Structures are given as C-alpha cells and as structure tokens.
Length: 145
Ligand code: DQA
Image 1 (cartoon, rainbow, N blue to C red):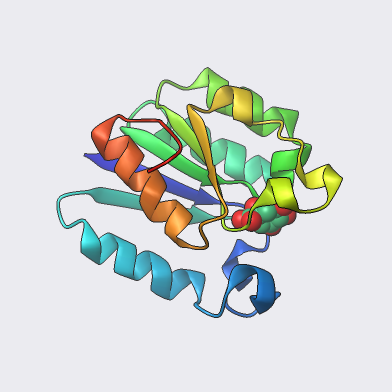
Image 2: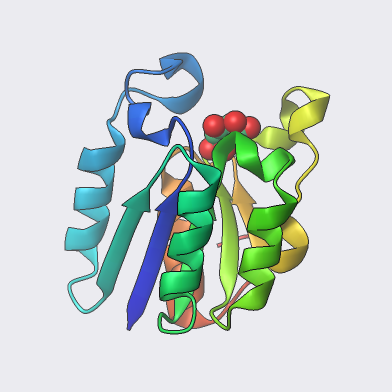
C-alpha cells in the first residue's frame, strides 16, 4: 500500500512554531515515527510552502497511491485550486489538521478542500496524521478513528 502525506505552508516549522497550538515535536521526527509504525506501507512524504508545488505533487501521486493525507495549512481555507486538484485525481484524500480548526478563528472554519476529501480529521495534535493513515488503510473514512 502506498500513502502520500502532503503538508502545506509552515508545517515544516511544527515543533518551533506556536508550540502552544501545534506542540513541541518536530514534524520530521513525528513523520519518521509514523513511517516506522507502518513497515508495510510505502510513504511518500512531501512538504511545500508553495501552492503550485502542492498541486504538482497531488497530480504526480494522485493516480498511483492508495490515499492522500493532506494538511494544506492555511491554503485549506482559500485554495480552490488545491480542492480542484484533489477532485481531479483518483486517490481518496483526507483533510488533516493538527489543531481543532472549528474551535479557532472564524476564517479557519472554512475549507475549500473538504468537498474533495472523504473526511476531515482535526484537533488530535500530530496524532491526526496517524488517524488519517489508519482511515486509508482500513477504508473507514468515519472521522472518529
Ligand atoms: C493547520 C490549521 C490551519 O488553519 C493553519 O493555517 C495551519 C495549520 C493545522 O494543522 O492545525 O497552518 O492546518
């Protein structure tokens, strides 16, 4: 099984950025532990601060992998283009957030990508990614993993 994890802007700074919201663990060390936890899964990890590069990656992997876990960061809230790219490919996608976006500022309640995703998993800290991976592996897209 192949799973793509796509991180958008500023997610490379998790561990340093606003630790009261995103925690102290670095994204790199978290993703390394996630990869080790699923030895039978081939992970394709990608991060970019640029909208077009995220779209290129969705198009590159999106006809090949078994699922995409995407945390588009702030692009979630205004990128119609990322939503369109997720709709264009065949792989099922899950919208992932570390924080509980629905409990934050009103502009974070809006998602331009959720209609292109099977479910939204948000607010579990970095464990949101593990929950998304489990959903892809089991095919159970009920957000309460
Ligand atoms: C985030 C939530 C977004 O609103 C924010 O812009 C981020 C991170 C999250 O994982 O909680 O960059 O996607």
